[in-house]
Length: 370
Ligand SMILES: NC(=O)c1ccc[n+]([C@@H]2O[C@H](COP(=O)([O-])OP(=O)(O)OC[C@H]3O[C@@H](n4cnc5c(N)ncnc54)[C@H](O)[C@@H]3O)[C@@H](O)[C@H]2O)c1
Ligand SMILES: CC(C)[C@H](C(=O)O)[C@@H](O)C(=O)O
Ligand SMILES: [Mg+2]
Image (cartoon, rainbow, N blue to C red; front, side, top):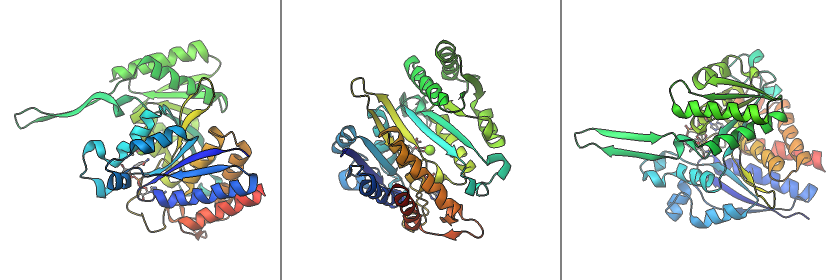
């Protein structure tokens, strides 16, 4: 039997609630197809800060480096608003991304047929939507130095963040975008702000060159990121793969979430480069949404983004394609059956809590794999 090591980092707020639903699916996979998953759990974010004094401990980082895939819930919340900047919950997630070198963040936005009326946009705009935002995740303004607030001594301060991209960082994310586009509809739209940012100008230059030299059979388009955001809402189906930097990717993916009906629906995969000898790549799977402090502890969280993130893990880390397809079909069938959490509730549907949604998916997955 295969042995597959998962590190579960539930985190804060609704993170533990949504992770509990994934644990049910791990059990289903072990029982039906002898998947051989073993799980270990550790703290991250505010809960790690409270118990261990840091948003992620070195010991947890070691576990993350040693496992086959990390499943991450969410971190943050008002409880930790006052903690030192370096120890804020979000710093735990950023350390995982940086130290594991997870430069490619895949954020697919799919409109399930049953949810075509859950979006704030008209049905015809989002029906059949299937786009992929590829966000560069280990560079840009998130990590550039200097990053500081300087006291100018005259009652004024200067706050600085630095947007930095080097050639290799743009080249590798561009290659990832075209490789993904090749398995889809063959089009990449790169979004930056070349009209005001040197990094945007250089991003555009490198993407154009990599396309010309290595992927000339595929289509490349460029958009300024602000206009791209507008087009994402106006006519999202014109896109296939959207290639963008760390900050624009963060914003564009939250916008894309509303095309699918709810932030509670958007999964993501964060991938590193394949190891030269084993071919395995470091990977972390997490929903796009945060810890949702406003609904935490009430059983109101939609676990489907976390569950769909696990499905991406089956696909990208474990090559369990049949099982990934089955899990995604189980999600679609659950929605088709009118089972909804509050965020995607519709007239005539039946509302369930977080656990009820997880049970409904687990039951359908078990039926498919048994
Ligand atoms: N990956 C992460 O851990 C991550 C991502 C984004 C934000 N955050 C952190 O989360 C905290 C809260 O941030 P925020 O409020 O801006 O964003 P959020 O994503 O937590 O919530 C935004 C809104 O969407 C709703 N929502 C989010 N996920 C949902 C789900 N699964 N089901 C139903 N409704 C859901 C929330 O109730 C809220 O109204 C902050 O500390 C932020 O830094 C963490
Ligand atoms: C929590 C935060 C650090 C994170 C980000 O800004 O990348 C989140 O918003 C995301 O989209 O994953
Ligand atoms: Mg975000």
